[in-house]
Length: 461
Ligand code: FEO
Image (tube, rainbow, N blue to C red; front, top):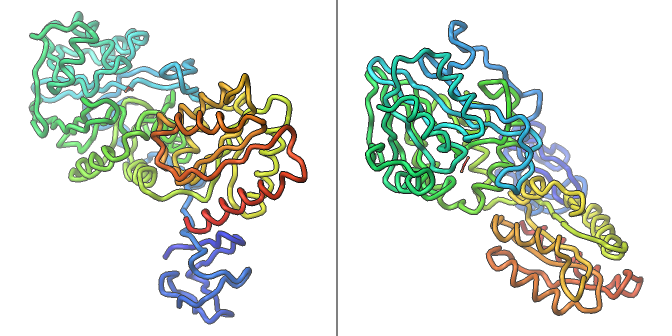
């Protein structure tokens, strides 16, 4: 049975304990409590409780102890090898999102009794790692190069692999084939084109292709290894992480890394992700082997995380990305943080001169509200705030409410600027507050109306 938390005072209703003083016997599920029951601490009703999310803690991290000790260090199951590369030093992805843990470009060799396939390759800068790892396996031949996704961090080394194994055919869908021709100048004859659901036999192992568009580009697909129940999902479920561990061993950290990845790559395509999850869940999956980050030997970990991220549920959380040039906007932000904290709403200010923009993107995945804070520069919004708002608009987070605060005498133009930038964010815009110069006591009434409005909205989340 699930625990519920009072969003007003933080009291947690634990069904195992119940609320004997309030007439609720131990063992009563929250859903079964009478509607007139009140919070024993602050007296609010059931409507002010929300499901307490079960956080994954470090105590729950797992090491894989079930593997066959005869398998090689890079072998997921018998004859399925990880041969990709760890990019420990990469600091920026897409020249946009910071990578505190580096990243990886995973590629996999599947050796069947008759044929051998390479699933995806690596960023061209790391092709030497891929070739070294393939040579270590002393393959007699390579028959197929499966390309799940044409973006160059996975496809960029295909031409070099074809040079080494000229008889290998590139197996992919029609759209991906065209992208690969455009991006890598591959020849038409290099390809075998597959359809959704088509299978390719390697002898005692069978690959099944599942088109999973928009995770991340429209041509993306996953490859399912039928006998071993491994889903090679490419970007889908990936995490920005360089690691010497083949499998996930620190679940909490990997989910955080995957959330960073999801925020930048997947978040704008939530509807497609939902359909693709339904599609892959028709398969029994023992392992998910994405093209970034470690292999999930407990696939439900990342499937459940994705389901939560794409769901309509938002956290009782407010983000305040801001810039302050001379302290006035910072004072305003400090006041908002104080008021929202007092109201027991999680609030995170992001000083954009110091912020890891990836962390802001992570928090946007499930925040209910974002409030941008800006001074006026040359008659408009500060460019750093424009950048954060533009990024939010691209990532299309599921925030319910958005607004702006700042310090200026020229608020009208600023507000118009914000509204034009945030046209993709389907949030209710709360009337903004702009003060003239430093916030003064006379401004407090207006600021408090703004804060109270948002607090009220959050009570209804
Ligand atoms: Fe990891 Fe869309 O490339």
